[in-house]
Length: 239
Figure 1 (cartoon, rainbow, N blue to C red):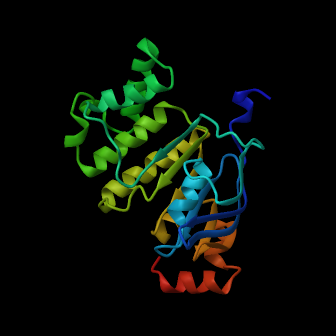
Figure 2 (cartoon, one colour):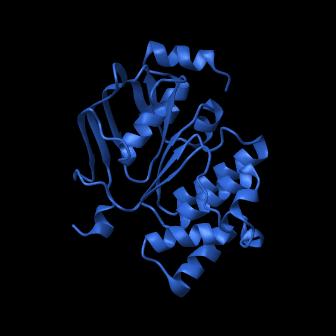
């Protein structure tokens, strides 16, 4: 199977534990991320959401258990991650996207076309020459998404990408995430906004103190959770 066909999907975590010192951050986690889905990881603060996201991306190795990408234990190259606070270089908006493309082996006129296309799609074409670090918080997050978009990843991981944004900026980010998904990218995202998950998710992973309390279709979760913890979690949050 060629790389284009493989794409590192599905992603399967099996009996995954992650320990930090004496603390068990994840315990016996089994998760399957199917191609083309939007999977949202939910849970209280400290439940292990960000850790699980990084395990699925391959940034953190499990203490025990395994993670495979398309049945392989090698992390595939065509993945991207966007963090809550974007990590941007001291370059222009276009320069940040260009650097990511250069690392991926895309240069010259091909890179320029990708840069223009990605910045236009996130509404930043007019700010291409603006230093990235003077952009507003919402603009910086859209730039981080443009950088990911330009790489055409098979999977995009997002760690609470709207947590520090005002509602209009958050909705703009949501729209971009939906656009990227519509192009065929699988989405895996953490959020503490249940309403956001209800709007966007196809599948939900609910963590309780590092364990999977539920892993089910989003429609099922929001209408009739399978677990007592799921019901309590929904009742305790405002949609």
